[in-house]
Image (cartoon, rainbow, N blue to C red; front, side, top):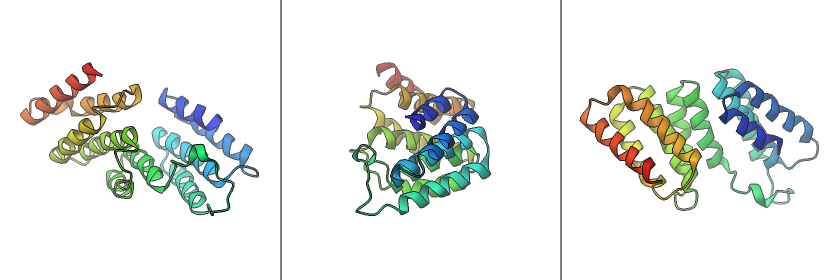
Length: 199
């Protein structure tokens, strides 16, 4: 519960408070909770530190999350409600963490590990990751790749009704705004606005 509140707090623009909440959730549960639950708390902490621009703390929390996921055994008391949280899902969030930190190459590397998530099953998560990756390519100075990946994000999210997913698309259009005189960018922005208006 506290971990979920942490993620909501981060999305509202209070990343340091969110990191404190996630760390408290981990500390409170570390002697009793299943490894996957603890890994999720550490991932929430890493995401908050990434949003706050604290690279070292984000890296430490992300590494701990990955270690905990790796510690899961078949006989672990592993909750079904968190079964979606796999290494590929961790990699999806790590892509965003490193994008937020301005470390585009690390974000692109993590994205390669996240590609295992099928878009048919994890439509929203895949669409959000592609939106984040498109923004990462802008950071990296690769407008063409950003538009290519952004178009894939639009395609995936076309059928998704999610304010959160659409916020990521809006963020991508904001990132592309400085290049709006480029015909390719102008066309993409038009398509994105049409999709968002229809959602």
